[in-house]
Image (cartoon, rainbow, N blue to C red; front, side):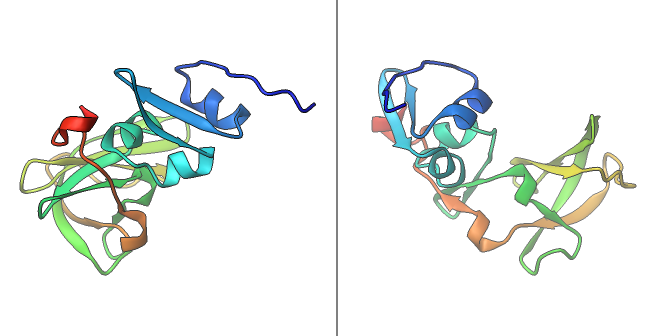
Amino acid sequence: MGITFIYITHDQEEAINMSDRIGVMHEGVLEQLGTPNEVYYQPKTSYVADFVGNANILRLGGETFAIRSENILMNGETVCTREAVVVEKSFAGGQLRILFRLPDGQTLTASRYGIDNDLQPGQKVQIGWDAKDAVKVIDNDKDENHK
């Protein structure tokens, strides 16, 4: 068509599905502008990571990382692991969501499709992720320019 238009929505799926480029604003500041793929897989800030796809925000060694719930691996699926405790699990139409708590109190959510498992609240497990799936982001809670 060759027509440029601006469409404002709070529906992330709608924005991702119909856009060539997405701008994410937070408190009057443009946090990120990019393709749907860039905004989803390479968020620049913790706000963008959480707002577009509810990524896990993990603070490790003074750095902040975004890790998508579909990239959290369990029990032997990765070499780099951390101990965690299962807090809860819920089934939502074909998708199993599992909430874990790390020893430092941070929580992470894992998503699995079509898989139910024997994990129970209180159970200790090993979870992890591939290094390529941990995206370093600006922490909106710590950076004065991105609050």
